[in-house]
Image (tube, rainbow, N blue to C red):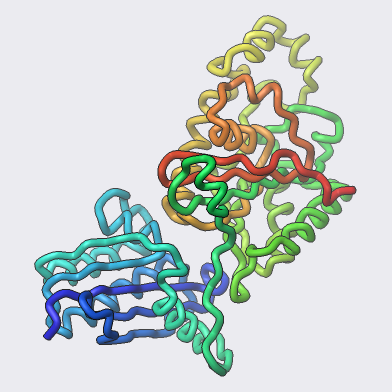
Length: 374
């Protein structure tokens, strides 16, 4: 009997949700000897559900071996933080899985959770990939290639900025042209579709992202998350078609509610409400009549960012949104004030990139790139 063991666990889904599987390995903490392996296909579930199943299988295997203390190591920031009690477990699919893991953990004298980079979790990763191969009917000829990180900062960058840990990388894509944007009218919650040019712009952006290294790993696309409005969902769908993924929506990525100014040009809004419009341009706490202020938008987008990092920490995401939410995320990355909203220009179908590190640092790597449209 080995009293102190290490459990390394992983899970994945090719499609998120899609054909999924998990892998877990139990090792002697002193010698690194492999004591048990577990892997299983799960049908169609999400990455997070698969990762939790991997943890459960690893803890169960450790219990069968008679272990008393367990060090759990996983590359899922979400699972590690939730099981450590630092993050709340809000998703209904994960709550019963987390409870089962806690029940198993209660049978040991001590369980500690540690996040590790994916490269250090290769054994469990390989088992999870073998399970996913079985789920998709792919022949398991030889060892499947391990999942590669979508992108990691080089050591020089980390040393230069002082940032520590693996960042969550956000690829921020503005939607393509609509009739409202072509006429330069305030377009907030009005649900307008892309024009023909807008669809062409979305296709060009999708082609550019499809050629970007690391956005498809082992046939699985990174998460593509859109504002719930039609113009962003159409743009996001073009990206999903190019990457072989699926579109999720998040209400926090929706555009500013311009209230009574919806559909007006800048000049028309200024003529209609000259004092209020002037105050709005100088104070982010001032809302348009019947709308929301930029301060409210900032809080909403920050909450959305935190939720996405909690679920996808350390990964790359494609976020398809609007001018104000994208500017707000860049503002967070730059740690800048609200005046940035009025001094930063974002073109239609433009691409920007910001990375948020677990230690609170951030790095803006690209702003308003439209090279794919030329």
